Amino acid sequence: IPADGKTRIVVIGAGPGGYVTAIRAAQLGAAVSIVECGAIGGTCLNVGCIPTKALIHASSLYESVLRQTAAVGISVTGAAMDWAQAQQYKNSIVKRLVGGVEGLLKANGVKKYSGKGIITDAHTVQVGSEKITADAIILAVGSEPVQLRFPGADLPGVIDSTGALALRQIPKSLVIIGGGVIGIEFASMFAAVGTQCTIVEALPHILPPIDTEIVALIRADLERRGIRILTDAKVTMIDQDGTDLQVHMDYQGRQDMVRGETVIMAVGRRAMTAGMGLEELGIAMDRGKIVTDDHFQTNIPSIFAIGDCNGRLMLAHAASAQGIAAAEYILTGKSAYHAETVPSCIYLEPEAASVGLKEEELQAKGTAYVCGRFPLSGNGKALIENGGVGMIKILADATYGQILGVHMYGPRVTDLIAACALAIRLEATAEELTTTIWAHPTVGEAIGEAALDLFGHAIHW
Ligand code: FAD
Image (cartoon, rainbow, N blue to C red):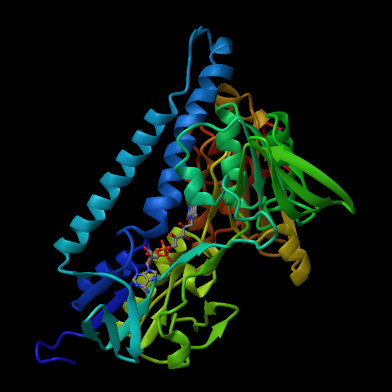
């Protein structure tokens, strides 16, 4: 502890994990430094959550104008998508948020260092020629896209998610390698503005972390919107044919090929831990991810790792929550991180969201559970907004009725999932959801109805 009595903390990485950690540690009275080698805001603000959602917002507005206005009595002629303007809109949102985070760090007295942070011993971080000593070091170094290595993977026109966000023109056709959340969001976004999209996924199904019943609904809707989905399809090589790229694959046991003007490789992300002294210091790693305990402490007691780099959950809000927990643990000895209440969202048209356990997980654990469902065709607000597409599914403990998981597909469910995360956090029961009064008309009413269905009493289905 230095003369001024403040605990010194260095955070490496200023994404949603690192900058939130730094602010929380400063609030708790620490002297905090943050080191960033790229842009403040990290992946999330600059090339992840925020820019994708800005472009998704623009593209789904355009699709709504084309497809949904006639039924409600609006006639639109000459609607056109100005992609350069959509990009400017996205960039302006990113700039504003990054500026906001810079202001917050300054207001909280966090000292900023620009450059790559390298750990030289358990209490020292080197940035260029400067050495920063600290009582605790928190690694929040995030992740980067995985590049598969097959012939043609480095051809021009084969891009990753960062390249896809910067495309200057809407491609006529796209092949997306990887049917995870990032790949599916890009397919939905570009399909909305007229791109012919094909998804190539090596697994037998898309969206591996999502409840299979919800995935079936999503897949059917994506296909109805003209997106081609090939599962059990392993890419073997890419080559060029004129202006198109040809993606060759082993598709369900036979050789096949799809063509696209552009190929987006969205096959996952890996922790960005190389070349910063972790191996030299003997920090325990598991397949590139930093191993931590429940307090996000590594095997070296003064070093913590939060967010994408510990590989637990690659989500921005999980990174922030882990950072707060680590800062509180270091500075107060207490912390709380409730992994079971971390929601996952997919920004499609309509949206998907889930929290807690999936049916497959309950089956694997041998938990006795009950399942309540409510199709949004029976919900007035959803019917008004999107023709009633979607479903809400609630899983509860068979004996006590405790809510164990909620899975949703429908309009704005990424906002609604917060109520369900709170229900799980408060160990609410199905009965408590049925006696909660949901405003009418809202999509939220379907949560109450799905809970009633657990007792076989749904009113509107
Ligand atoms: P990052 O945000 O990756 O930040 C790490 C920072 O550390 C980076 O700025 C990096 O430059 C810096 N850094 C790395 N090494 C060093 C070093 N040695 N020295 C100094 N600085 C260093 N998540 C969601 O929750 N919702 C979404 O909708 C969503 N959409 C996404 C869409 C896309 C296209 C992508 C790619 C990701 C998306 N994610 C989303 C995931 C989300 O962006 C990440 O989970 C989140 O950014 C992780 O935060 P982090 O702080 O751990 O790491």
